[in-house]
Length: 313
Image (tube, rainbow, N blue to C red; front, top):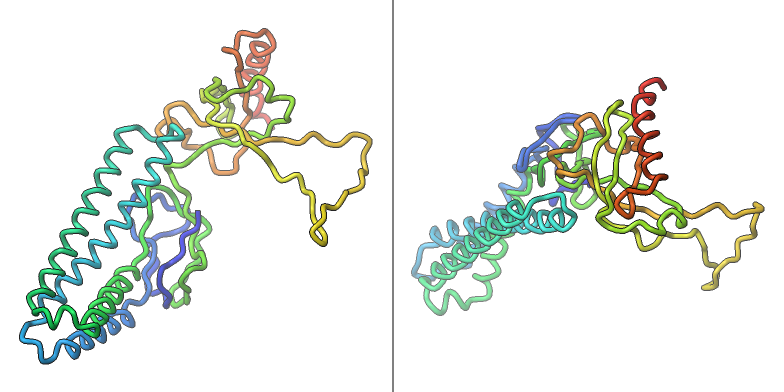
């Protein structure tokens, strides 16, 4: 996945390096916060100006709005983590306990956001009906919350455990909001994609046992299982003027089309071989119908032999 900053600005610190191993929340890089600090100050000044003539202090509102901005950022991060944990659990990569913990963290962050918003509402009500119903005051409060959230977003952090690669950020470089800036490999979402011919999928079903041989780890056979089978691919047919183009055949026999099969290692991320890399070569042997067929057993024997000979080339 690629990470894009939420705000634009000049990079003043690169907190990571190429191929660094990161934990959730580790800083990646920081954008110059000074323009956003000034934005917060302007928003506070606007709020003070809007509140002139109201017999109440705006200090409590400022503090409450800062808490809302922080709580909203925490709730957003926790919600994304819970969604990612649920996806990992459905693919069999993460445990139920990890999903439950992520969901509990998301619920707690949502409750904290609700409490912060309640405190902010209480602070507004203390100004009186005239103050809290004033559109200019409400607009100034929202502008302050937005400015503080933008300021928090100047420090970009890792969304989960993983590694960064192909880092080209440098001090003084300008980055824009939206376009990807840094490549992050999620350490909790790793799988193997095997492209198999359609006639090889006749007896293949989800949860079928799989043995794996990594070129990066000669002499070892790893256990896995089929997680899912792809439902379709793009056959390459194009359209012109809204009509499909009939591509003339240039071969006697049309090449077989291959469908993606997603395979995961037994034991999840903890069992993933550390020497394997994204995009590496893996030899896959699926054992349909329990793997008792003599063809499967013979293939498993040659796979074991190949796991040793792969170190020779």
